[in-house]
Length: 310
Image 1 (cartoon, rainbow, N blue to C red):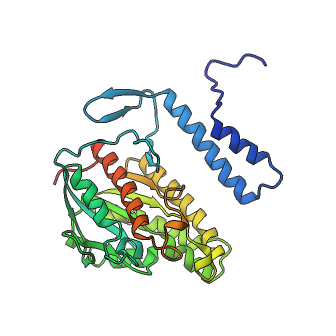
Image 2 (cartoon, rainbow, N blue to C red):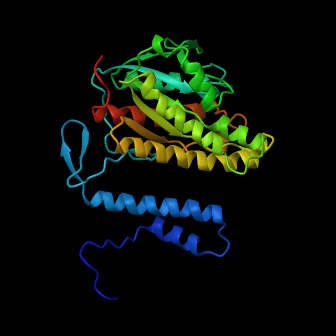
Image 3 (cartoon, rainbow, N blue to C red):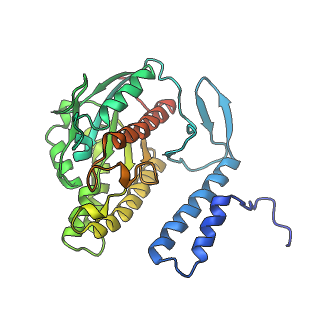
C-alpha cells in the first residue's frame, strides 16, 4: 500500500469495521444505509476530533479546542464511562430548571407521578446542587413537583401553551423532550414523511431563547417507541428517525452560531422498548434512565460555564 500523507488517519476501530461490513451487505435497506452512514461519520468524527484535544486538570474535566474554527455541541451519550466535561460535584450551584415537553415530562404512567424528575432531583442534590424545578403544573410526591409537561401535545401546541405562561418563570436550564406526538400525528394522517413535525420541533427550539433569553437549553433525541403497542406503530417509529435527525442538526447548527444549547441522546440504546409501560411511556426504571442522561447533560453545561448567574 502506498504511503499516505501525514494528515491522513486510518481508523481500525472494531465498531467501524463492523458497520462497514453491514454497509456492504446486499441485504441492507436504504433506511439502514442512511443510519449506518450517520454512525460511521460519528465514529470517524470522534476519532478526528480526539486528535486535536488536550486535557487540563482544573478540578473538573475541561476540554480545550486548539486550532478549531467551529464550536461543537457535546452529545451526551449513554455510556458506561463518564463523558468529558462531567463534574463529580456541582459545588453548591443553584439551578432553576424547567422540565418542558409532553406526557413523558409530565410523568405519565409512573405510579408516583414523578416521571424522571424526582430521580434527577436526587442525583443533582447528591452532587451538591441547590435545585428548584419550575413550571405551572404540579405532579409527583416529592418536594419539587413543578414542571411544564403537556400530555398529548405536539411541538406546536407546546409552543402555544408556553407563550401563555413563559413570563411566570425564569429558568437557568430548560430540559426539552418533544417529538413523539409529532411522529404519531404524521402517522395518523399517513404523511410520507413527518415534514410538518420536523418544522414544528425546530420552531419550538428556536422559540426557547425568545421566551427565556438567559437560559441554557438541553434538547433530547427521543427514544424508540414500541410499535406493537399502538395503531400505526410501524409508521410512527419510522417517523421518529427523521425527527431525531432534525433535532441533532438543529442543535449542532444553533450551537455553531453561539447559542447555549446541547444535545442529550436518548435514542441509541439507553432506553429500550423493554423499559416502556406502553408504546412510549417509560416504566419507573425507564424514567430513572432518563434522569441519568439528563443529569450528565446538566453536569456538562455547568462544567462549560453555560449556566448564567441570577
